[in-house]
Image (cartoon, one colour):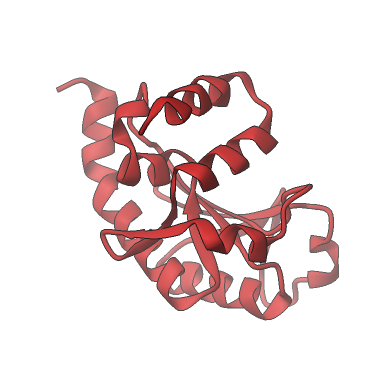
Length: 162
């Protein structure tokens, strides 16, 4: 087993646990490579290495996500600023996401995607392993908005699925 596969095997239970917890206890849906891995693994060239969520962007929901991450041992950041007890939540606007980090595992909760409201993506949600993830159409919508070279291939493969 190579080191990348070993790292995946070590982190995968934690990735699943946190994705299930966050999508069941908050307004969040799994996106990114872990979401693709759970729903359409055949389109991925590599194993997922982090947890990406698209979340409803109200302060109450973001605060719930932060509390869950911290309760599970994650240090939470908005960019370079650690989110601590006296954090100024007004600076979150325009920063797009918060990040939880524990033992090298990243959990990114994106609350702003330009051109996409959280409510719009809800109709594309499916459940996989008790985790709310996006179906093929939802993944294509989100990936198209990312407009990155590494997502273009995944979009192409998803579009070929029946």
